[in-house]
Length: 153
Image 1: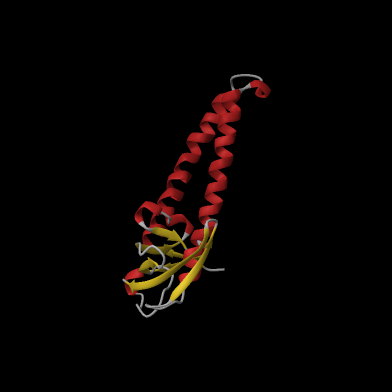
Image 2: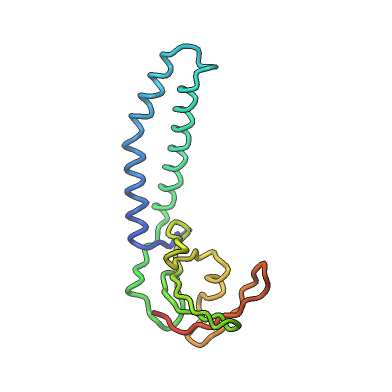
C-alpha cells in the first residue's frame, strides 16, 4: 500500500527515526542503571525507562512502516487541472463568502494554522479530483458546508 508524502515530510520523519535510533543506547543504559537500584517491582526509574523504551520502539516501527511505503510527491510538479494530493487550492465557502487557502497533505504534515489539511479530512476527500469552478459539500457537525474551488495554485 502506498503512503503519499511530500519530500519535506519524508525528510522530517527520517530525521526523527535517526534521532530515536541514536537514543536507543541511552535508554538501555538507563534501564541497566535502574536495574541496579534493587527490587524491580517498586523501582519507578526502571519502569519509566522501560515505558520510554516501549514508546520509542513503537514509534520507530510506525515511522519505518511509513517510510517503506512512501510515495514521495513533489507538489511543485503537479498539474493544475484538478486537485491532487499535495495540491494547494483556494476555496470559498458559498454561504459566507469566506476564502481559505489549503494544501492537502499526509497525516504527518497537518498544520491547520498553516492551511495544511489531512488527505483524510472531509474537505480533502470531497475536493480531490475536482476542478476550478467545481463545488462540493462537506457534512460537518454543524450542518452541510458548500465550497467552490476558486483556484488551484
